[in-house]
Length: 196
Image (cartoon, rainbow, N blue to C red; front, side, top):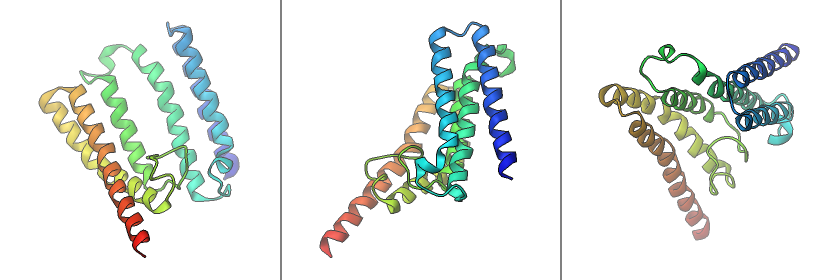
């Protein structure tokens, strides 16, 4: 099992580098190429050191969840460089930014309910990174509201065709609700501790 996961990681990072090089030779600027290469390298190092980053054992399911999220981040990062080079007829009338943001929201929402408390992934706010209970509240709520919110965003996009406005409002609601709710919960928890 571990060997097959290791081979999968090598394939993903190998294909990512290949796609990134193709994008470079198809008129990607040198600065963008260096940024992308740096990000892929950092993600590769993070993939091998995930247990150390999270302070959990290698076999912990939470480490596996973070590795999955890291893999998809690499794939999405490379796609951000590569997809704009494809002919515009490939994506019918839907802006690539809308597709990418919705994809990232769906994946992040799916994984956020399982993320352990850490300082690298998830909804990292001053009050969520210091308390595990608040962390769980914020990230679970983020996960629970993601799918209904994306569904509403898609409907609104096709009704209004205002992708920037729909994205902006959707992202504010997506991050805002868990942020405000977890902040209120944290304040109530602090008051409760102070009264006791």
